[in-house]
Length: 597
Image 1: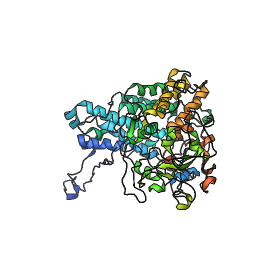
Image 2: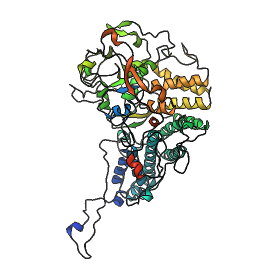
Image 3: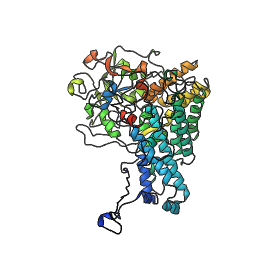
Image 4: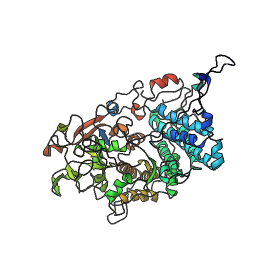
């Protein structure tokens, strides 16, 4: 997963001789060409081929043209109408206009991985230099990647077509390419099994294979395989996939249901066990600031490379672009990745309680903080709020701002609607979490960037996966509160049931579920999780639609009023999954379309 790694293509030059015995210049195979057979007899070319298999791992930094997971949920709004995310939010999507279409992209990755698995076994140079161990490791890496690409297909499209180890020849007939989708449960069982096979071989830490260790960061490990399995099985146990009778008519052409109609609580046990398997590796720990600052602890999960919490990362990425798009114009940024009021309201108060339960919460009046007037809505909030949200008159330093200064979103202010034709937050907030303030590539910047790995899975998520699954399978289990409290302790807020100012333990399974969902929304905010959570929980129809913010058309006190900022359309049942493009449907006669499309 390195920018220096490009897709490695090989070609076999096939020449048809015009007559026997004729040898012409153009009949010769150039001696600088490498055949596919030669690729898999040499160590270097095989490693380049494997690097190509890694290249299909998504870079999720672009959340406006390449990925919709942030701006099409209820936690953030992307301001620019010129980008693909806007079309999705207004419902301008169909099988004929398949936005964010990744179907063929992931299958290309799957085909590449399968070809690698099937052809690496007899690599003479690797066998001579390293023996069987390295071939086994490389095979496990490709197997992990193939399983991961299937998972990415499943989270976007639901049930998919499983290819196994079968290679489709280039000259296959149309009939030979007709394969139906498998049921979601069958897909889960296959991908889970593949991840187990990979995990049995993969190293605990990236093997250096004779290279500098930092070169290998991002390569597959046992922790990565088990972490993907944890997320896979959590989704599979959730209401969208586990006994969802709303989708009873979603069937293959042979009548087989795509979604199991019978609820199975044992799926939650599998999900809990999968998360616990990652924890029990003992390889990861929650990142904490050495100085004990909970704001820095939360910020630096993302800004300190290769820290103890990071499990699955993309080494090279476009996070500097995300930084610039999220920074205020005052800092030379483009002022467009906006936090919704709904997300602002989800953060706890510093007493550990939600805003509707805390006596410390107020939406009236202002408090002067270091000479700056701050709306009381933003006072006494938990540390993760201050690490995650840039709000009106919050202090910011970064980009081309040489010193710290308050950020104003008033209509006539330096970041307001009147100051630029397109670059203005519709909600009066910006995302601050995972923003590298050293990045300085916007207007007036010098192009410097704060590089860091992009986190795809971290330990904090695994703790929350475990708590959620355990609550559904074994409510009241002591581990539920234990792992929620580990998250809250790092966040610097009171714990459930113990500590100096304990919060009462939720008394019922339903109450605990509400708290777990709330903790997940805050802890994993802006990490491309919310889109999938609200769908797998089947609450998207209730929380999508109009999203709110402050009144960005006003100055002064009139700014501090909740108004509709944007609309993020959700259509039942179509918006649970993306449509398979009409082009692919026309080629795949046995593949049924997703519901609602």
